[in-house]
Image (cartoon, rainbow, N blue to C red):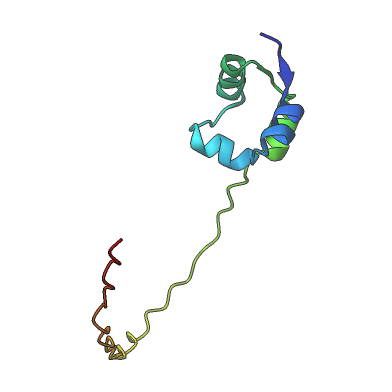
Length: 92
């Protein structure tokens, strides 16, 4: 089997790097290389892997509880469909 580069594979298959990692539960460069080896793809350098890897940011999220919004009732009436009319077949 001919080995292709990661860049060629990524462009040819229109692969999103983050989705590729998430879909295959890849967290380390070694696991990434093993997966690509099985697919017949030449892995990029570890620096390229680290640059493309999604960053985990730790942000403090302030949550404020507000009063729940009131539900608005929407009345939907279905219009009665007219009765279907079937035409009689013409006799030959």
